Image 1 (cartoon, rainbow, N blue to C red):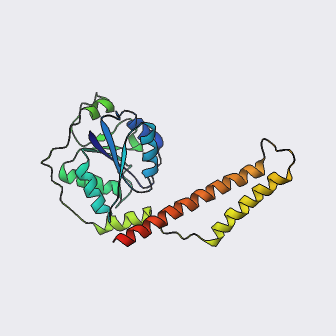
Image 2 (image 1 turned 45 degrees about the vertical axis):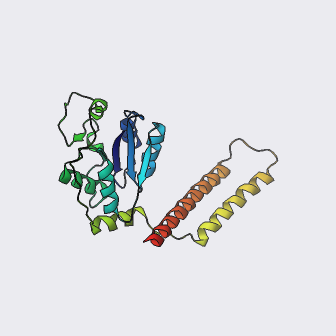
Length: 227
């Protein structure tokens, strides 16, 4: 199978552009590789929708993770508007240029024209171009590196330590109680209740935030233990 590395800007949220590329990929031919971070969720959603296998990468530093990703990827697809500095896409693009690894830069600034780091027939579609890609040359040797600026910037933006406060816990309890009391006090349940709907949405949002905080905290504690 051909291994495709996929990375995005930290603040990338354009689901359509990613999905439009993924739906051109045959799940029996291509396998997606990406890195844990803020944009992984949208990559995961698009992969699942198009039945593509997604392999997630994470190690002690961003530099080491990128090193592993570059070693396994035959080509990189980078979703970046090239306006962020010292971030994952910039590091990927620099290292691809340094080691002559093929990549495709997809940007919101030029939706109808992607940038290819290799020669292509401009008349061909993305699907035909990607189908013409072969496995990466075994002669390509990637030098290990460790860039602290990229490492620290990635951690600070991707794994922000947040404590679960008593205020959050109390808010969840209060919302649960209010919804429960409203249901008990009404003899006839309305099909649409603005107040309850609003509270229900707030509760779901708060619970989602709590789950994300718990996940992030547990992951940070795990990697602290293994260092």
